[in-house]
Amino acid sequence: MATRTSAVELAAHGLVHPKQRLRVVEAGGDAAALSRPAAIIHVASDGGPLRTIVGDNHRHFVGEEPSQKTGFSNPYEGATEYALIQESELRADVLKYRTQAYRISYIHMGHREQWICDHLRHIRVNGVDVVEAIECKPNMSYLGDVAERSRFNTLARILAGLGQKFRVVYEDGVKGGGERQLNFGQIYTHRTVHVPHDAMDRFERLVLDTPDLAFGALAEALHPSRVKGESMAHALICLGRVSIDLDHYLFGGSPVRLLPEPEFTSLIDF
Image (cartoon, rainbow, N blue to C red):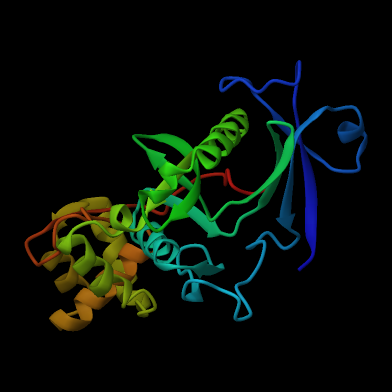
């Protein structure tokens, strides 16, 4: 896959402080020639995932998941990455995301290290836009590797300079308890359900008039058939238009909030 290379300029002294701001410059350009790089970032030329998951040399199950929310196809490797795709699709505060977003090359303890961002997402928390750069792990066993923790600390400082919050997530933490897992399974299954124009018109009127209501009332407004109405409502959740509590099983009486089409400038495009 064709890639573009960007140099992350280090502004002063060769040390990356968590509060030090860095800037991205195109590799090979005049700005890059005049900068002192803290790291090199490789991104896909088409703006999508850096790589696709192909071949048979994998330790975990692999696949690709198309996103209704973003329009990208998202490659994944392992249960944690797959569960995180589901979570990003279902959480209304996730405005945009992609997997295998970039590869970053940086210096740690005198050695060059490489890291591929498993999951990059732009979220809005209490009106504040945040970028999360996420490493997916099956469990917390990596904490016993002192060298890996040290590498991640250096990486976190560099990413903080870019305005990105580095996180490590685990399978159990993403999947959560039984109610969250039921929601994942039932809602995500209907992500491709078509919502016809007349149903969308009714939905948009509800957004303006009664944005806070019960899930059953939303389903009834979308279609007189409960099964069809709920499947359409599930699809709207996946589009980021309906906010729910993922940790409580979604049923007819569950409170939901209907949201207008989000307005934002993507913070995860290079």
